[in-house]
Image (cartoon, rainbow, N blue to C red; front, top):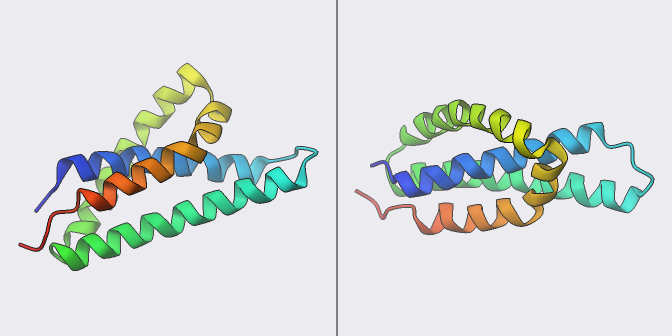
Length: 114
């Protein structure tokens, strides 16, 4: 029922998307194009996260996404530890590559129905 590798990628994905959303909210840079790209990436990441939870519930068991969501919230606390080491800006910029890669593996590793 629980595909731990997929859930692990979801947790990492959540960290990247969270820091992109945070960066987009606080963005005060001169480049409006970068601000738009950042906001678009954060929004698409949010949509991908919702799609993953819906797909997981559809493909496996309807209630598992609720558990995965809670696991993701708890695991996001690790993001604060990583932030202290590398900085929020670095996590946000890494998210441009990080969350799409994590999203790919999240979806690929969802088990077929039980």
